[in-house]
Amino acid sequence: MITNRRSFLAGTGSLLALTACAGVSEISDLDQGKSAFIPAPDKSPALPETSLSSIAKSKGLRFGTAIGSDSFKDADYLKIIAAECDTLVAENEHKLYTIQPASGPMQLSRGDELVAWGEAKQMDFRGHVLLWNRMEFTPDWVSEKSFAGRSDMENFVANYIKNLTQHYGQKIYSWDVVNETIDPKTGKMRDTVFVEHGGEQIVDFAFHKAREFAPHAELVYNDYMIWEHGNESHRYGVLKLLEGFRKRGTPIDTFGIQGHLGINVGNSKTGYPDPQAKEWQAFIDEIVGMDYNLIVSEFDVNDTGLNRNPEIRDQEVAAYGKAFLDLMLSYEQTKDILAWGLCDRHTWLQTWWPRKDGVIKRPTLYDINYQPKPLREAVAAALHAAPVRKA
Image 1 (cartoon, rainbow, N blue to C red):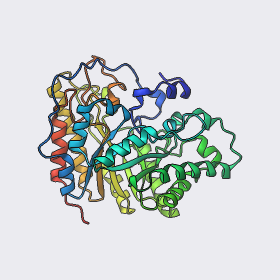
Image 2: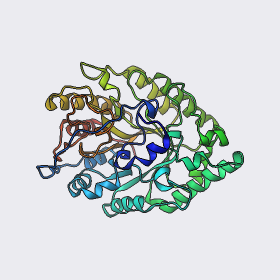
Image 3: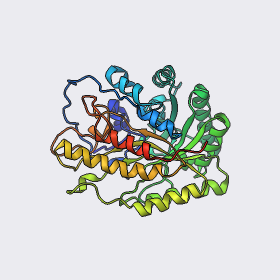
C-alpha cells in the first residue's frame, strides 16, 4: 500500500516504468508487490521478417511502443524495438516528476537521449505528458507552492508547456496534453492543485497553450477507461469532457485510449470477463461523431488471474487483445497503435498486480527470452485486417 505521494515518487526508480496510468481508480487501491524472479535470457532475439510497423504503414497507421531510459541497458530489447516500430513514446522521461522532481531547471537529458535514439532510427516520437492532472503523480514542491490565484497557476502551466514543447519542437509530432483528468469514481474532474488554483478551465487552458507553442503537433486527451465492467462512470465523465471541449472550441485533435486491458482480471477464475463491447462501441461512436481521431496509446493485456500454464495463458491473452484491437481498428479514425512495452522483461505489470502463484507475467508481445508470443501474431492479424486509412 502506498501511503503518501512523497514516498511513492521518491521510490519509483524502475518501478515507474509503469505507465501513463495505473489503470485503476486510485493509486492507493493498487495491489503493488515484488515481481517474480526473471532469469537472464537464454536465447537471442527472434526478429520478424515483416515488422508490425510495416503492416501498419500499409494501412495508413503507425505502430510503436513506450521506451524508457533503462532500455539502453538491454541491447537485445533495443533490437526488437528497432525491428518492429516506427513510433516511440517515453515511459516517464517527459513527465513532470522526472523533469522537475524539485523546483529548478528542467532536467531533460534522459528524455533527450530517447528522442535522439528514435531520431537516429528514423522513428516518430510522441510526447507524454504536459499536464497529468492527478495528485499522486504531482511532485510535492508543486502541491506546496503558494499560487497567487488563477493567473499565477496559468502562468506556471503556460511556462512549463512552452519550455517543454519548444525544447523539442518538431521532433515530437504528437503530445498528450492532458492525462487522466476524470475521477473514475465520480465521472467528474479530479480535485488537484491545478484545479484548486486554476479552476476546471485549466485543462482547456493547457490545450490552448499547447496549440500556441506547438502548432504543428497533434493534441491529445489521454485516459484509461476501457471496455470492461466498472468503467461506466469513467466513460461517461470522459464523454462529457470531450463534448465540452467541442462546445467551447478547445483545440484538441485526438482521443487517446490507453488500452490497458484486463486490469481487474485477477477477480476472474475462468479467464477474462465479458467486455461491454456494445457499450464501448456506442461510446466510441459518440466520440468519432464529434470529429475526434483516435489512438491506442498504451496497449498491453494483464494476465494476473489466468491459467498458470503459459501456453493456455498466451492464447487467452492473444484472443482478448485481438478482439479489442479488431474493434478499434475498424474505425478509420484510429491512427496509431502503441504498446506499453514490447517484452515481458520490460513491463510495469511484472511489479503491479503480481500473480499469487509467483510466476512471470506474460502481458506483452515478446517473452523474457525475446521470442514472439501469440499476442504478437494477434496484433499482426488485427493490423492485416484493418481497413486502409484514407489520406
